[in-house]
Each structure stands twice: as C-alpha cells, then as structure tokens.
Image 1 (spheres, helix red, strand yellow):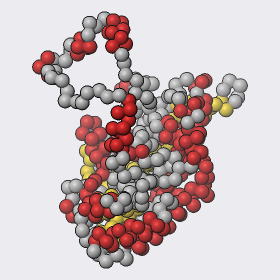
Image 2: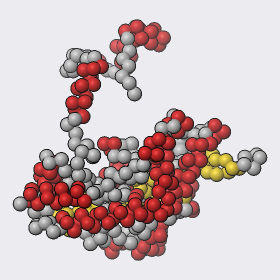
Image 3: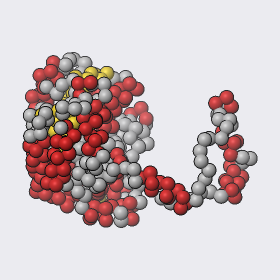
Image 4: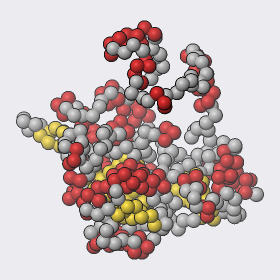
Amino acid sequence: MRYLPLTDDDRRDMLAVIGAASVDDLFNDVPAAVRLKRPLDLPKGQGELEIDRAFTAMAAKNLSAGAGPFFLGAGAYRHHVPAAVDALIQRGEFLTSYTPYQPEIAQGTLQALFEFQTQVALITDMDVANASMYDGATAAAEAVMMANRITRRKRAVVSGNLHPHYRQAIETYGRFNGFETVLKPTDAIAELIAAIDASTSCVVVQNPGFFGGVQDYSPLAAHCQSVGALLVIAVTEIVSLGLVKPPGAMGADIVVAEGQSLGNSLEFGGPYLGLFATREKFMRQMPGRLAGQTVDTEGRRGFVLTLSAREQHIRREKATSNICTNSGLCALAFSIHLALLGEIGFQRLAELNHAHAVQLAERLTAIPGVTMLNDSFFNEFTLRLPKPAALVVDELAKRKILAGVPVSRLLPARADFADLLLVAATELTSDADMAALEAGLREVLS
C-alpha cells in the first residue's frame, strides 16, 4: 500500500465532523500525568524519495533466503512455490474477498475453503478439518483448550520435542485460561505415558519432532485412549506427510500443523497458516469455522459456513474460540499448490526433501568433530558441533551461507544445547549448496 499522508485541511475536516477542536482533544481520557510532555525524539519528516532510499538501504542489510546456500528450518521452510499459485490468488475475486458471512454471494470462497478442508483431512488422515487457523503455534494452544472442554480436565502434558514457540503459546493460553502445562524434557513414549494421570486432558507431541526425529506414536495414542486423555500431534513441516505415517493413522485425536511449506513463502515470519483437524465425534468442539456442503432449494450443490462456534455468531458463553478470522488467502495458496502437485507429486516432493537431507547429513557428519543427534529424520536433523553453534552460524553468514538454526536461539536456558545446530534441506537444496556448507563448516571448525 502506498504512503499517502493527510493534509492539514484533511485533519481539520475530520476534527470538525467529530466535534473536536484539536487532535489533543482525542486524548482527554488519558490521565495528564502519563502523557508525554515533550516531542518524540524522531527525525524530521522526509519526502518519498528520501524515505525510499532509507528503507532500501535498511533492507540491503538483510541476507535473504535466495542470496546463497540456505539451510534454515525450525518450523519455517523454504520450498519452491509454483508461479501459478501467486497468479491465481491475486485474482480480484480471491484477493479482495473477506469472511464469507453471506453464502449467496460467497460461493467461490466457501468452495475453496471446503476443498482446503478436504485436502487437510486427507493428508492428516483425520475425519474433518476446519477452515484454517492463524498459525501452527496458536492452533496447538487451541487444541489443548479443545481437549480440556472434551475431557473436562485441565492438565496438558507437553513433550520436550514440541517446538518451543508452540509450547510457549500453550503456556500463555494456560496462564489466562486456568489450565496446567506439564513439560516433559523428552519425547520418549514410556516417559510421556508415566506423566499421564487422571487429571490429564491431553498429551501434545510433534512429529517430525523439533530436533528432527521421526517416530510412531501409536502406543501413546492407545494409552491416552485407555485413560480418557486425548493425543494431540503437531506437524511443523507439512511436506513430511507425503512420506511419514500421518497422525490419524497413529491414533491422534487432534492434529495441528503449520501449512506454510505449501504455497506460502517465508516472508520474514508471516502471515502463516494454521491447520486443524480432528475426529468426527469431536467436531462440535473444534475452534474456528467450518465450511460445509449442502444443496439449495433447486437441488444444486452449494456451500455454507457451518459450526462457526465463536462469539461473533453465537452467545459468547457458548463459543469454543475467539478466533475472529481464518488465514483465507494463505489457505487458498496452500490448496492451489497441493492441487497442482496431486497425490503422486506430493509424495515425490517429500521423497526429494528426504533424499536431499540424507545426502547433506552424510556430507556434514564426515567432518571431524561433527556428530548426528538423530536416529531418524525427514528433512531436518540436529548436529552436535565442537564449537558453539551460534558462533559457527555467524561466521558462515559472513560467507553468505545460512547454515541452520542454533538450538540455543530457541532454547537459551539450556546451556547443554549451545553446541546443537538444526539443519534443514528441501527440494531447493542443490549439490552446490551442500558443497558450500560442507567446505565452510570444515573451515570454521578447523
């Protein structure tokens, strides 16, 4: 959006309409004691050309994802987005559409959401999915609240292999909604089972895990079911479901995921796309909204919003969520990308990701002093380095190699994690990229 400043005449006209003598009158409700009594320490206003130059210079300080070899992951992944995705989502009927409250004039948007829900349900192997959430982390927090409602319990057991941002979102929701979060510093199924008691509403795990490991949580699902708790499985790399056993097949009751990897680029952290799926018997407790299929009075196929159990639609005390909207355009991008891939293409994409990660792991673990933390992985793994990972990453960034994410960046309280580096490979990781990282890492560690 262009920068269009108001003129003095514009301000006078607006003040006259609302009956205020000056802009200061708008702040009469703010106590005088807390008002700033001096001008802000800001530079004088500049023209558009000067502003453009200043911001361009600031942006040039960033090392962009396409500027060199890129191995960052930890919940946000660089994938190829087909040109057709942007071309289609930028059509006016999609780009400018809003919440489809009036189905008679929003059939296209509703059908797109319905198709998106179907795709999410299929790849997660669940019965039903909603029309998207804000992102994976808030979807995880909403899943815990949903489990609390279903079980009428208020204690969530969270695996240490859950992404720290997801755990922090759950803890924040819990602080203000009166439920307990119990963090277990492990993803071992036996230890998670041991932490479950009669007050446990759910267990939250991630697959592939934060450190990259992949495992089958079917035994944990069976135990949760036997004691009346629910199993929530989070997926931060949705492409993994083209190859890894889906959460539904493991017995998950609720699946939450970050959908950014399909159709949506990194964009410095957002907007992203939360996915949410569950069993049919829990559908009425699902947050957000659901697009449903119906027929009109003439028997023609049509679409409507249904089970929109939130405060804008029903009485607040009966709402299951205060989620005010969904990531509609991001969901559409996801749906278009997945439709372009098709079932075979989705599987092939996952295979490419895993193959590149295996090649990269073999090259890096051949470097003296570098060891692998994982027994298994999809497209991301954790290395233990002979030097602090943050220092290594900074040195390689000077060579325009984004080597990965130091675990200490996300878990700074764990001093024993200072030498751990998360490294991700995708279909965009070339042989030249791998060679550059290997050579750079050898040099920095020597």
